[in-house]
Image 1 (cartoon, rainbow, N blue to C red):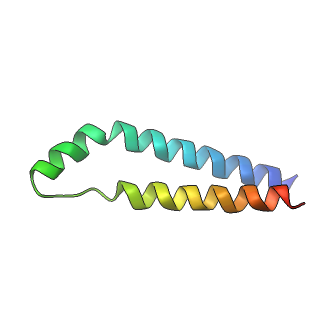
Image 2: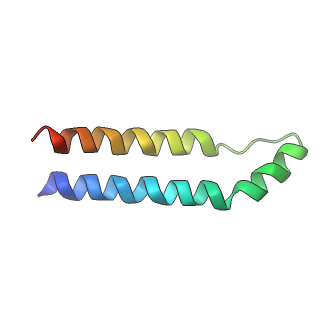
Amino acid sequence: MMTDLHRSAAFLLYQTTLLFGLLAMPLALFARRLGLTLPVRPLIESAEQTYERADARGRHR
């Protein structure tokens, strides 16, 4: 039960992070023109790894 809850929460976090990345795209493109970069990619990769670990634990029960 707790594993399912953890996996669901990790999936929600991952999907929310992807949505944030998509919505931040115009801002990121503008920032790049100014020579700045937004740390969106590491944030998405971290959320993806968290979800993959939670999903792998859920499948091995």
